[in-house]
Image (cartoon, rainbow, N blue to C red; front, side, top):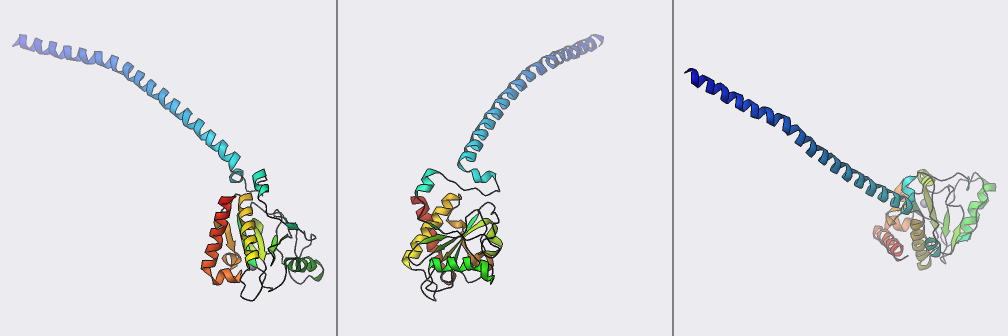
Length: 247
Ligand SMILES: [Zn+2]
């Protein structure tokens, strides 16, 4: 009986010895494995960070407007090369049509119709200009497209024009002439509208979905033909998209 007890104790002692030995060896091994893992994770982390920095750097170069809320326009050679012909006839700075207020970052292009059948682009431009003396109302637009497709610029794109209400501050406005009461644009005017909108999209890093109607801002029936003919409006935007990709 006594002998058996001793044997048992010995056995227990043996086991505890083994356990003790294991206990001291295991953490060392585990530490090594852990360090290896840590180093590997750090290497992965640094690699991911480097890749992110490269991506961020590229985006900053190719999409600079993503990093600012300020007015910014691209002036690269390839953009200048596809600029439509623009007759720059800037208005005199005055509180009724060219307040001289700086625009913010341009996030949209707003299309209007003049609601003045048969009038030319210069007729409309001169009406805006004369508001400085007549004080009748406050109205203007950055661009006017005429019945022969001519483009007249009245207000620089970095200045507010009085055309699109709450969106004057962050959009460029285009008034478009039309021959009659239906408000339908003729082919020459339409072609210039597509060209100018596509070019402005390129200049301000936008796409055709950033082109909106005055109606989309205030629900005013403007431009009449594009409000009353939704499919014509959709086609217009598609034409802008196609031109933009052809540039
Ligand atoms: Zn309008």
